[in-house]
Length: 159
Picture 1 (cartoon, rainbow, N blue to C red):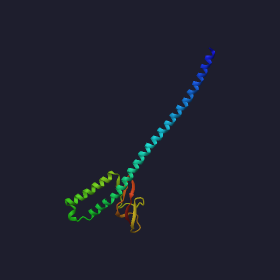
Picture 2: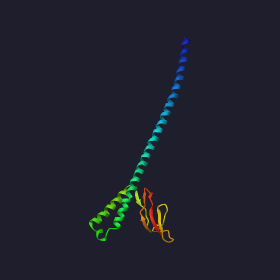
Picture 3: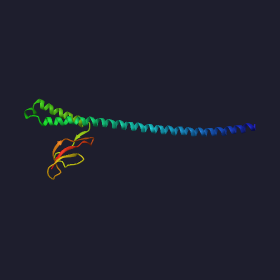
Picture 4: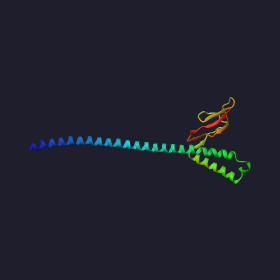
C-alpha cells in the first residue's frame, strides 16, 4: 500500500507542476490580450484623430476655394450704383452675402480685423506703407481665420 501512496505523491507533485505551468501560460495569454486590447484602443483613438484631421483639411481646402467668391461679393456690393443699392435686387445681393458669411462663420471662419488696427505680421501682409505709422489705414484684401488659425492673412496698407 505504501507503494501506491508514493505514486500518488509523485502524481500530486506532477499535477502541481502542471498547474503552475498552466498558470504561467494563462498569465502570459492574459498579458498578451491586455496588450492587444491597449494597442487596439490606441489605434482606434489614432483613427478618430486622423479622420478629424482629414475633415479639417477638406474643410480648409473648400473654404480657401470659397473665399474668392466672398471677395467678389464684396467688390460687387462696393460697386453697386446708388440707384440699385436700395432696390430689392440690391438688398437681395447684400442678403446673399450675409448668408455666405453666416455659413462660413458656422464653419469656424472669422474675418481678420484691419482698419484702425495695429499692424500684426501674424495676421496682416503689408501691400503698401504710407508714412512711418504701424496702424492699418486701408484693407486691400480681407484675411480670414479658421478656428482661430490664419488661413489667409489680410493684405493691408499701413501708415
